[in-house]
Length: 321
Image (cartoon, rainbow, N blue to C red; front, side, top):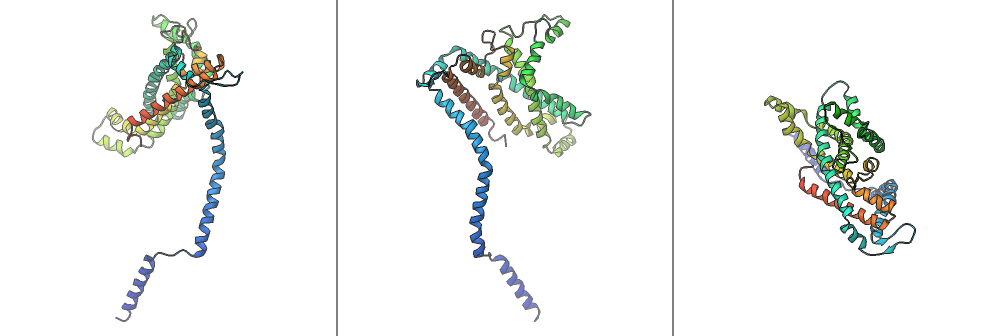
């Protein structure tokens, strides 16, 4: 009896001591603001180089482009303010309209086709097989190869006299064509190159996403008797939605910035059949020396990309996270 009460009292006191909040000592409360200031100062010092780099090489050129789009500037003379004349001319320019349409067609075909091929290859290469690393490297190699070098190889493939494509078609009795000189086929040839080159990066992203899918989902589906095709459409594709949205956005942006293939393969021809928006910006700036016009075209391109990105984000809202 006598020993129980003190023990209970000690337990009660101990519990009360644990529950009561501990007040910070004056020394600690004085040290925290100074420590936070040091951390903030260190953080700003670490991010300052990146901020300066972004400001110097991204923010300033964007601001300069927007300002120059309202001027008549030919590099040799001082810019002259002309208001919205460049934008009106761009809006009424049939060549830029053609370039915009070609870019939309190029994007419409290269993005979904390369994404579909990439996800199938990623699923195949995510399985255990011999030489898996070599296969992945082979598919990814076009992504890290210089676009000009790739375009030179495809120039030989599309060559009407000695090209590999016409030689392969002649074996099965199909007559060859002047793929890059025919206005009806030149854009499709450029699209083919874009699809082939764009598979590697998309495949790599899909492989990374596939490795994050819980294997228990596939095991449960196997127990229920689901086939491989059913697993692909019921488990794999839904789980790849965040990666698909990311791949779609960067692919659309990359497709609208296509330039090297067009410059090497067709030079925008024949008859502007393969002229893209970026190539028209290049011609306005560095062939016609109309920097103000090129800046206005660049603003149009930026606005077009921004609208498409926001629209795709809205369409996939709630499915990408």
